[in-house]
Image 1: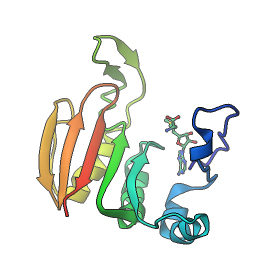
Image 2 (image 1 turned 30 degrees about the horizontal axis):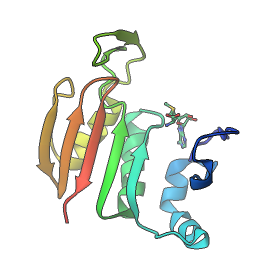
Image 3 (image 1 turned 90 degrees about the horizontal axis):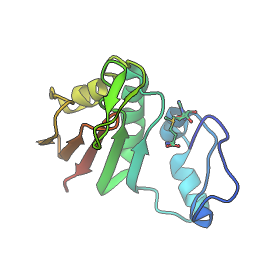
Image 4 (image 1 turned 135 degrees about the vertical axis):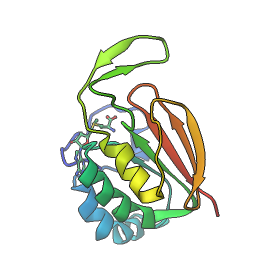
Length: 148
Ligand SMILES: C[S@@+](CC[C@H](N)C(=O)[O-])C[C@H]1O[C@@H](n2cnc3c(N)ncnc32)[C@H](O)[C@@H]1O
């Protein structure tokens, strides 16, 4: 799902993908369940990957809109949970420049889980019925796995 129509010809495994051109919060709050039914798909997802605006307010809205669509063992995956102050490191030691999102994504996760994290470190946690695993490199990847 993307607000831009970013479908591409010739993508690998294209037959397994369905693209929705939409504002993600809107369809999360209203429409996703019906869309799943129309597609003959389960209406609770095994995995939801969020990699959009990287902004705090929007990420909070995404969490509120999409957590209800996770199945009982589902995984919520967030990219860009460690954007630093506009510079980020990869595991091979290289460094690149990005932008400073004011900890937008990780702050929204912290608020949702009622925790505070050091996103520059690897960490694990159990909070609010989720196993939390964080990888700090490449702008940060945070995994929330629902514990049934
Ligand atoms: C960093 S890119 C990631 C794209 C994709 N995950 C990838 O790896 O190719 C962020 C994408 O989020 C989209 N985006 C931003 N805000 C959005 C929103 N509210 N709803 C849906 N898509 C959004 C942008 O159009 C952009 O294509």
